[in-house]
Length: 342
Image 1 (spheres, one colour):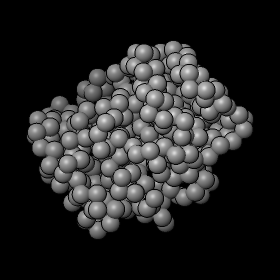
Image 2: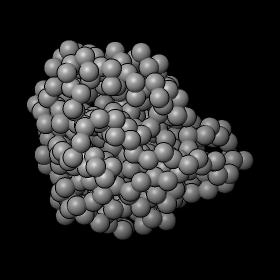
Image 3: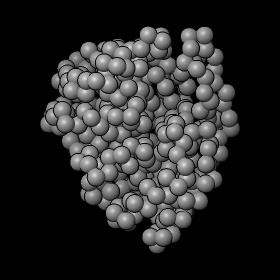
Image 4: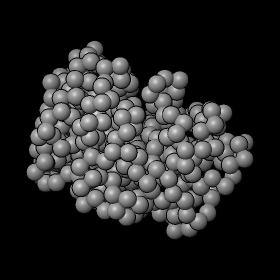
């Protein structure tokens, strides 16, 4: 995998609306500006492109122009990284317009989560490391300021670029809904005590390259050219998390079973499953994961549960395509190599 250059203070970062265009909606624009200000206070210069703040309707009806924004940001030598404004539901529509050679020949940090899973698959197909992590509206625009945990992990992975970085335990978490209303901009969401990282099964240590993303998006991509190829599953650590739609346990069961029927579960070295939003189906998800793995005689496949990524905050920044280690005895996830080139 090709690694992009690391970030440093003073770098220009492109803010792109590759999924939903709500960052430019009249009633949400203030929140985008709040997230932009936070990134600027962290030392970055945030740059918008034609569709970044064009609004939901224009962004939805112009997937080619979204792809053009991505190409322009990649080709602009002044831009050192790209961050999603937010997720959405249909960024897969960019794929027919995206030139993978532009991604490959101009490797840059791309970071986002949820529907950004589709864009991550484009980077994976181009052979470029990308980062499953915070977005502007959901994380950097957090009421009262971005969580220290989110910011610190972001900086450790993308700026300090440690070759051996152990992800910290998130002691507190939230997915409390507070309306994105200007009157709430400084109102902190309520935090809850977090359970520790759970070992569902497996022992000792295993390693593999990180891959995966949002389970609902991967489900949507199955059968298309954007779905991860077999070789990507080979000896990988599969990251899975569910969205704010909090799908029924039966959905998780069916999707995992389908991965098994396709022969993909048998190829991987381990699974890291993110905490579900609102902790909904917290126990039920564990039950169906174990149930399906048993069906495929994978009772020894290492599985972490309740990991700090996806649709709860604060969150990790995870480099897709980088070698990582699951230390099941000590309940730790770490990356074993630098996530960026320099």
